[in-house]
Image (cartoon, rainbow, N blue to C red; front, side, top):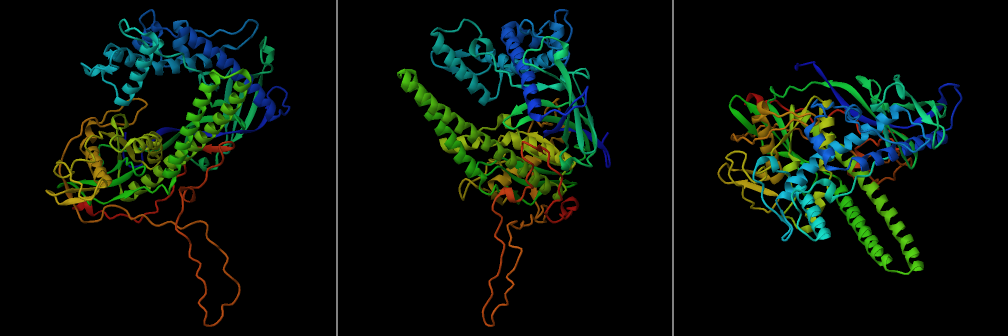
Length: 601
């Protein structure tokens, strides 16, 4: 049920760290360093058992069972991973003399089943592509049916695996290959998903500002009995921006260890305004641009048809895109240098090999630091873009945000360097951030086809000309033109409005419009998009000189500098080591109110 005032549940993630720990039985305080050690023992047991179970199940029959979704009695497998594993008899094993509770085994099997179910799709793709693969030429024949069709980027990755396998084997493959033939078993992440367990292993209680987690942890690396598993009560703070939110449920966290100690990855369910997609009359289209992260434009639907002013908004990353490109080039250089030293160390004498291995370790550490920095910038960039795009859509009165389908979006034709940079941009992360942020404002994010959005005119659906280069577009028939990305945004918004009654919804995915329909979009000169306000720079000198200016001398005027970077517009979240969230508080739009002229046009 949708309508004004209705709400809908949605989940979001948040990270936090415990600031206190006590023994649940005696009430004695426990140092956080001791807690980190005991959690490390738990993660070692979970990781070792998961690695052994994956290695044992790394066989084609395993993926055949998961692809069919049926057990030995031809019953449908449950969605819960640990229940499905118990029905199939896939149980982890532990070293002799080590006692592990059955609830910990649930955690192990749940994580293993999640990994194997994810790889089942890749196994099917490898089997389909290997049947059409020619080892002599390294080419894959076109698919004969829609069932064998996979995204081009995914197919290229599988093709590289098949070429490497053919080089190692030296002979043509006999029949279809499976995932177990072309790659090794995946490594298990060192984490413990407590959501797969019940109250016998972990339980949590949440107050307004704190979360208390009671979990059983081992008291030694190899516990021999129940007495060596004791409950510990951990207390962590809830991030300040979640205080007062309509959160209806807190889920058990996932425990991980990083360089600062124990980290909780929690999930919560809250109520947000429900979106009514069928009654949407205004949409915003977001086009992914090679020059910036994205651009947007508005299109509206009225009794006379679709209208737009063909003016849009372009996201300004304040130079972070250039910084990400520099970090990417630096990481690639470190990787190439480490690979060269590795080849030299293979044939070097023992004393030289030890020296080269030390240099390789330093290069790997630097490359890891560069990757962590890129991940942090990508995250902040994605959520800053999502916040500004949501504010723009809310100020314009849009009920739908249309984004390009990333499965069919590829970067090509811009040169090797630019193609690589565009492919490394955090578009997928930006889509997730946009869907999450827009849901808080009651706006639905819909995926629409991307083909032809930047090349066709929204009015007549004819090819656009480029009189001013790549970034301009002009239609001589409709007499409309402007920025290429803004024209693409109008096309995407049009496809969302025309296909709002034919939306495909799948579990775990955003709503999608599969077919791109056409209807002429008339140019309307009435303003339908908000005017973004220019934010002030935060580094403003607040104190003025106390000296009296001399007569006849013009005093210096203290003018604030223009905004420098995205870090000045986004309220900095707490460090990843304390409390933080991928959710950002809803802020008021900085743009001016938009006129409703298009609805009456």
